[in-house]
Length: 244
Ligand code: DC
View (spheres, rainbow, N blue to C red):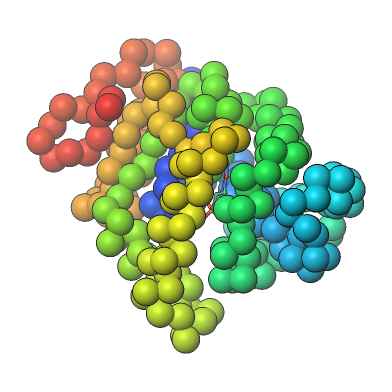
C-alpha cells in the first residue's frame, strides 16, 4: 500500500486500544510494532524485584545499567513479546503489581532517557509503528503520521477489566477504574514529557468503532502520508476523527 516506509506514532491514555491498533497496522503494512509501554513495565518489574528506591537516583542509574530489553517474536502467535535480561516477562508485566507502580517509574527522568534512546534507535530504518504516551512529541517528533487515540473513560475501564479478568478473576471493576484514573493523572501531569497530543497529531475516537473500522480509517491516513499527499481531515458527523 505505502509508497515508502514511514514512522507511525500512536499516543493516548491507558486502555484506549493503542496496542490493538498498532499491531493491526504493523501486520497489514509489514512494519515492526513496538509497545513502548512494555519497556516501562519491564523496567518497573526489575525495580520491584530488586527493591530499587525510586528516590535514589544513583541506585536507579546502576539498576538501568543492568537492564537489557529486547522484543522477541513468538513463533506460535506471531506477537512481539517483552524480554528482560533474556527472560520472557510478557505475562508478569501485565499484572496489577506492575500496573500500580509503572506510572511512578515512567515519570523518572533517568528511566525516560534510557527508554527513549532505545526507542529512537528502533526507528532509524522507519517502517515502524510505536505506541505510548510521548511517541509523537518526544520519541519521533518528525513521524510522518501521528495518531492520538481516545475513547470514552467508561469504555476504557471495561476493556481493561475484561483483559485483566482473563488472568485474574478476582479483579474488580472499581480496582481497574482507580488504577486507570491514577495512571492518567500521573501520565499527564508529570514534569518529564507528559502525555499530550502533538500539535500535528490526528485524533481518532474509537468509542463507537469496531477494530476493523478504526483500522480502515488509520490505513487511509497511512496511504495519504506515505504518498506525501496532504492529509485531509474527515469532517463527517460520524465523528471518525479529524484534526483537533
Ligand atoms: O501503555 P501501557 O499502559 O502499557 O503503559 C504503561 C505505563 O508506562 C503508563 O502508565 C505510562 C507509561 N508510558 C510512558 O510514560 N511513556 C510511553 N511512551 C509509554 C508508556
